[in-house]
Length: 250
Image 1 (tube, one colour):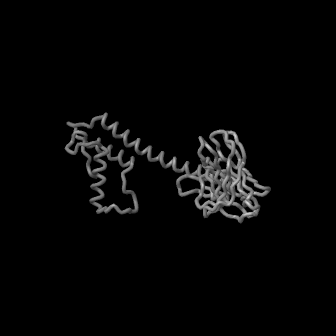
Image 2 (cartoon, helix red, strand yellow; image 1 turned 90 degrees about the vertical axis):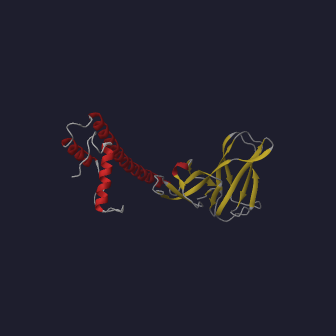
Image 3 (tube, helix red, strand yellow; image 1 turned 60 degrees about the vertical axis):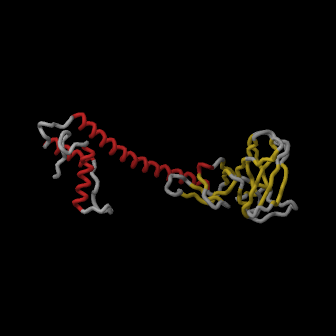
C-alpha cells in the first residue's frame, strides 16, 4: 500500500490533499486517460478511513499526527459525503413530486384554463373569452380581433369599466356578423390613459390537449390548443369552462 505522510512528515499537506495526490498517482500508474472505466475510480469515505487508520498505525513517533487537524479533515470529508447523499435524495424527491403533479394535472385534459397572453384558438363554433386587468376606471374599453396575419377582423366596445379584472368575450363573428373559421386569433383590449391609447394586460382561456413532464427540469407542462409551445402548469391562473355564445371554444 502506498504510504501517506503524517502531519509533520516530508509530504506535508492535509489528509484530503494527500488522498487526492495518491489517487492521481494510482491513476497514472494504471495509465488512466480519463475515459470512463468499469469499477470504482474515486476514493470514498471507506477508503479515506482505511488510509487514515494505516497512517496512524505507521506515523512517525517523533512527529505525531495533530489531533485537531485529523478531526477537522474527517469532519470535512464526512460533510462532503453527506452533501452528496443529500443531493441524491433531493433528486429522488423532486422526481416523485413531479410525477405526482403530472398525475394531478392529467385531470385538466379537455378543460379550459386561463393563461397569460392575448393569443387563443377559436373552434369552428363559438368564440374566445379572456380576462383583462384595468389599472383604473375607463369610460370606454375597446376590443380588437386580428387573425394570424395581423389583419383586423373586428373592433368593438365593451363600454365603461371599473378598475380590476373583467371578463371579455368575442362571439367569433366578424363586423358583418359572419362566423369566422377556426384557428388562432389575437385579442387586444385598450383604453385611454392620460389621453393616450394603451393596451392592457390580458389572459385568455385555452383548452388543454395533454400533459407532459417537461425536459427533466421538474416542470409539469400543458399542451394547449393553438399554442406552438407547452405552457407551465404554474402559469395557469384559473381552471374553468369558458363558454362563449353557448359553445365551448376548446
